[in-house]
Length: 395
Ligand code: HEM
Image 1 (spheres, rainbow, N blue to C red):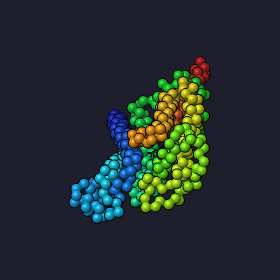
Image 2 (cartoon, helix red, strand yellow; image 1 turned 90 degrees about the vertical axis):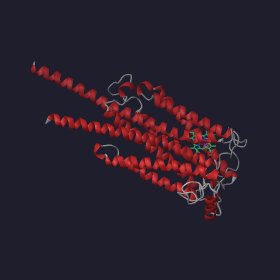
Image 3 (spheres, helix red, strand yellow; image 1 turned 180 degrees about the vertical axis):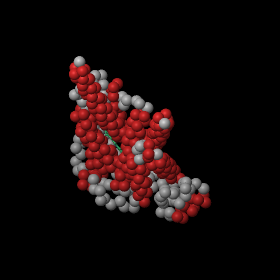
Image 4 (cartoon, rainbow, N blue to C red; image 1 turned 120 degrees about the vertical axis):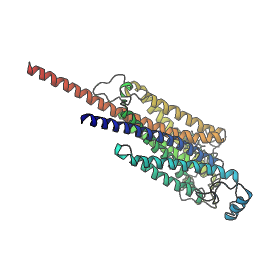
């Protein structure tokens, strides 16, 4: 009887290990695909192909970009105001195919999680991401049907970054589950050179500052999205000044950040006045300066305590990605928005967000692991003391 129960429990442990490993692989594939989809979105915008297909989800009512003379004639008859431009249709459709594949992958992941829920795998988060992807699809549609309205373009970009962040969180959770299943300690013991009761690894008090940093990064990404959506990338052609001035005269913040702005026939190339674009561009630069100063101090403090807090590696990753992102931003201006640099700036923005999320996750894991370890130390100590007392009494 006991043997049968033990065999059952071993079987169920093996099931949990298998399912969480499979879900982890799917989640990692989804993270990688989400980065690709985000980059394809930037590429589509940068080659001015955002309106390459005037309808959604098809292209001129076809599943692919119309190529033959006959289908182009049909397409042009359907949308006489936007004649087919095959070179612009493909970037748009490739982005949609990749996004559609990501959607299917995430739905599959959520459905699998629901099926295996008795094994205690994450269910709510994959379901939430699946729902969020539907919303993101709707923003993709509005991007086209509302003719690149900047508010929608910026929200669509932020939605892509949010999808990526949620998928990363899911992958981190599944990795933790899979590690626990395999009996791997979450690197707590190896991360601390010495663990003394009462210590907190030195990083717990930095947690609010880490969340503050995350907020700053999100705001900076939103400013970047607004810069891109309003075609303000070349509003300041020089560096570090803008048009030769440190604080350009006549910057028009009221129009630059007017979220009720009129779109006109469409927003391809932008409709905003030059002073409005300068205001947006300068705000993005200032945002980058604030992020740089904030993170320089925070990361330096965490790095100095790396032996106690165990966060050295995560801190180094954030520092490298941040510097790369700033270098790519500067290259964008100096080299006049080359396609590869602009797409890389977008992708590195996403990686920066992920690296900060990972740093916060790491800090939380270590702090929770340490707490568990310290309570273990305390329990052991109590047990020893109790057994000592017991021996004294029995003696
Ligand atoms: C922490 C630092 C930074 C972050 C997180 C960040 C983030 C972003 C993001 C997410 C975009 C939108 C990209 C797209 O839609 O393709 C963007 C656009 C842009 N950023 Fe940054 N950025 C940073 C620093 C800088 C710096 C230092 C500069 C230059 C001074 C810069 C210049 C630009 C320009 C010119 C664009 C518009 C590119 C385009 O239209 O494709 N950025 N940024």
